[in-house]
Length: 358
Ligand SMILES: NC(=O)c1ccc[n+]([C@@H]2O[C@H](COP(=O)([O-])OP(=O)(O)OC[C@H]3O[C@@H](n4cnc5c(N)ncnc54)[C@H](O)[C@@H]3O)[C@@H](O)[C@H]2O)c1
Ligand SMILES: [Zn+2]
Image (cartoon, rainbow, N blue to C red; front, side, top):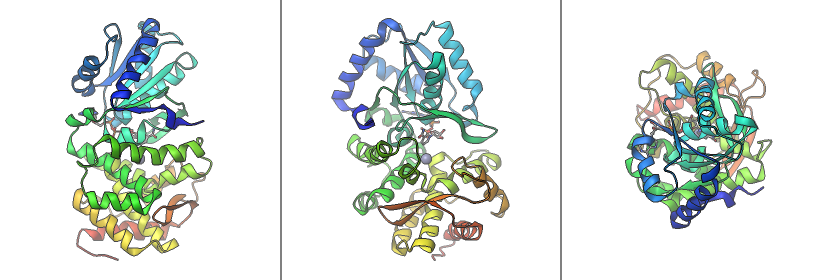
């Protein structure tokens, strides 16, 4: 399998999208949008491509609390009303929530209808729309239910990013930092020099970051080995994301939590594998510059550790499983740093606020 072949962008992307629409027009096209992409992105899509006049538009709400099987059921019901058949096409036009939920709904409706992703957030362009993971949350645990299912194609168009709020761009920027750290000093150094979540928002930089993920996914689609490297920053990041959803009226975005996770897990990498202290410093400074410092509402301890245990990537609840770095560009997975070091890493992050460094 080579999923790199299915990523399109630029003028070639629009031409290919037009061909796909023409191919599926007769058997029914269903466009999944959220409350923002229906206003901001659907008009662009319709202006660029013909043949969507009869497409049924299905709208979901983009909050993470709606990433549930109930939302999927609403989509299935609309597909029934719209007489969707096996050979129909769903176009998921939105961020990672729309591509995760839409991909899952499409992959399970009538045992699977065709779907394509047109990601409209930076995070979805470099990460969520790629690699075939689809699904929903259950009992507030992220992505507990889902299937691996690949879209027929993914289309990256930078014009959609013009309306994306800066905070959302930062969220995607965190995933780009993660890709760079896993991949190479060259790519990490480039992002450090660019030092901007705005300057990375062009197709060349997006495709470069996306290709880091796609190369890894191509070598290990079902995540039995190397794909786990993509979880770098996420064992702690996901726990902080869930924690923030519990305590904050305006919770952290996925990438915002991952940015903290990257710092903590780099700290653990330094302690366990000797990741260069200067690399941790470069990352911590970059993140501190761009992202507001997060203040925990309780003393980090058992609650966060329990949330980490619920992370689906942990094969057992007794040990916390991490993907770490030996050095920039040299990931290592299935690592068990132990609770003490994990807590130390959280305190390292907390102390960054008062300028304490290692
Ligand atoms: N499947 C995977 O491999 C994978 C990887 C990473 C993240 N994810 C999932 O992705 C989700 C997060 O994705 P996200 O950050 O894209 O969030 P999102 O889909 O909720 O989008 C964020 C916000 O931006 C708005 N928006 C989208 N496009 C816009 C545009 N062009 N202009 C203005 N506003 C726009 C949305 O309406 C929403 O309010 C999470 O559920 C996460 O679990 C999945
Ligand atoms: Zn992520």
